[in-house]
Length: 336
Length: 223
Image 1 (cartoon, one colour):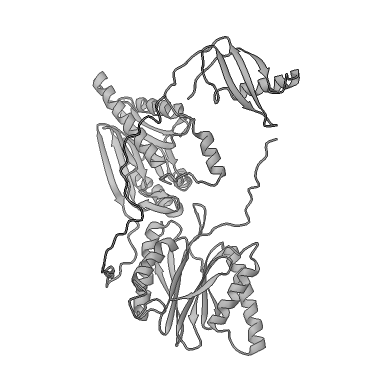
Image 2 (tube, chains in turn brown, purple):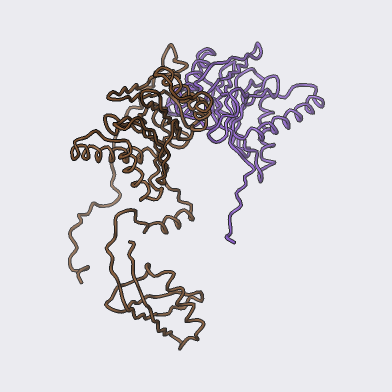
């Protein structure tokens, strides 16, 4: 729990074996400031904590605090378990893997609006866990968002902002603007300091015109005429930088987006399968799911495969190793 | 100055999968041709299969620099054997040599996951499977590499006897015919390519039988 505690401490130290010299007292004091929260037991006016110093003799430190400000825990991440996680990873326990999208997502502005594109592969490490997932998320009727990074994070953050936008539409009675979605997303991501690993390409057309933005996991944003994100972003950007120009027509734009995504699909191992495209213009949107399927299965056996029947069970015999006991509510043992 | 663990590694993993299946009078060895590092593809056309002797072929996945060095070493040893004995090495003999070569570098291993296939002195198919330091076993079929966790269970399902009590035990050498075994290999690689990002591009199949060596290629997904 993060609590801001303002302390003015005067310490008196007493040890088992007599009094300490001034040097040791200073060291103990500085240590005390370094780890105030871990051992704080908040009794009325004095804070006791036990310090184990190098020589492993235990000193009882009696502290008189002048002022203790009790601040209720704010929202956001609780970093309580970070030390435990570090300890566990030192012992060799691995953190469970997240499902990342290892992706290629792109967006560009053309003469009538914006076009977004994405591949459809989701990976868990080196294994493909979804061959045809949807990475272009709905935000508003005129705004869509592609997401790269941790799949759960991109889903959750786009769903949340989409709901907020809808409420805002009801409140204002107007069509949502892209900058609104942008501000909601960036402030959420910034407040989580990059721990919500969602890298987004946000695009849409509103009353002020077509807009395209990229949003990074730490909360910074860029406003661009063409953008790419994800592990395949370099492959896709190479295509954009060669062939993009202002005033693309709809057909040219869709072809360029498909080419960029295909570049990511074939040259980046984290991206693959199919191309999804979304075209947004003033008052109209077109979600072209699986616009291209350049990766059909290469071989299907003509004769098929049969699977042998499982071994049949001849006899089932259960021998309990211990007598079954009935567990009843504890009596007086735990009562204070 | 904060202390930092040394983080240079002499090894890299270039990915890929290999499979070998032994039949009554043939042996099929196959590997994909993709070489990658991290999330990038280095080349789509790299052969992981090496012919060590007339009747002995090895497929290796892992760190291709170590694989290449290992192949050179074995080729040199085979040449010496031919000079000394005036004949080619048999597959079981080459299997033992490979095991000893790998264990020789027990404390700085070849990062190479090998599968050796060929015909023994009687003309029956044999497959030997290895770990990185030379532990080996004669088996009826095997797979190694990044896709092996996807391929092996399917091979077990199709080729392995469901229980050792059901005679005759299917394990050792499969009763499948040669075209059926090749079909199985193609299916298995097409499936592994769907789910493993390091496997793909092209499949190279080498078939060894009494009439000699034959090579076949098949396209795989390139994404």
